[in-house]
Image 1 (cartoon, rainbow, N blue to C red):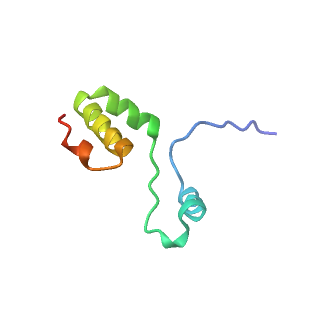
Image 2: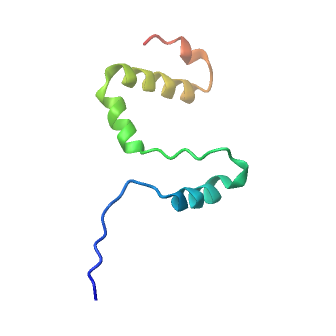
Image 3: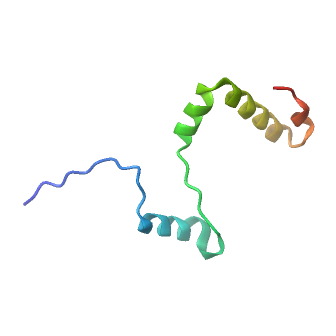
Length: 73
């Protein structure tokens, strides 16, 4: 019997995308966005301007309005 080697892959096949679309969006959605949140957070934390923008967006969402948009970067 052959040994099966599994490796961690970050590539999605078309079948993976179809299954995710059916599970989360169904046929009504135009697209499914798949993101690597850990990588995105690392990128945001790496660049100060992106970190400031993320902070303002978080404050805006937390306050539930446009008042926080007036906060300066």
